[in-house]
Each structure stands twice: as C-alpha cells, then as structure tokens.
Length: 120
Image (cartoon, rainbow, N blue to C red; front, top):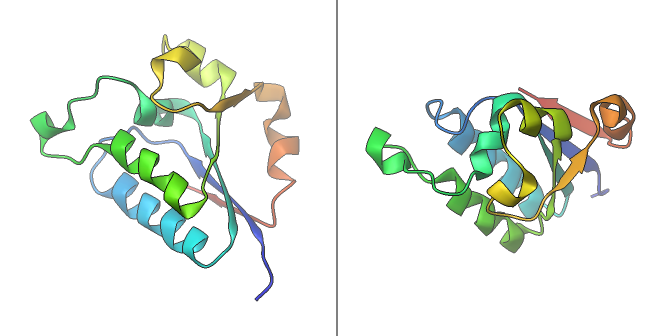
C-alpha cells in the first residue's frame, strides 16, 4: 500500500456532540494503516487542546487526553492558525500539547502539500 499524506482540518469546538470523538477515531484508524497524518485546528477547534477543560461537567470525554494518545499512532504534526488562537484569546502556551502555528495567509499553500485533505 502506498503511503499517502492526509490533512485533517478541524473547525468545531471540542465538546460539540460526538463529532470530535468520531473524527479522532478516523484519524487514529488512518494512522494505524501507516498513512502520514497531520492535523490543522482552525476556528473554535483551537479549544480542543486548551488546558483546564472540564468535559465531565457536560458528560463528554476529555479530548485533550485523546490528543495526547495520538502520539502512539505517530500523529505528531498538529498545527493551528495564529489568528484562530488570537481571536479566541489564546496563546500556544495555553494548549496542552506542543503544536505549530501557521499564518492565515499560508493556509492554502500548506494544504496543497497533502494528497488528501479531509475538512469538516
């Protein structure tokens, strides 16, 4: 099987129903089949990794903990857009994992590097 590069673009907030859990399952499954997986968090998806979440209050799973498990699947390239953080009053230091940020003007060229772009 040829290795393809996948970019998963997430936009919805962390606790928006089962959406995030299902998408993370798809990401882990893709990576389990030895495909190169990268993630890009845009808009409210930047809250997925915010330190200090209390998802149990709304009967949801802790998405930040799931993200930490992605390393076991060799999913280590996680990016965000600088403006998405700034517009939500966040900095990279507010997130529970080390991720890279990209300027909004570079998003389109960044996406072109991948064989498959899965955006929700």
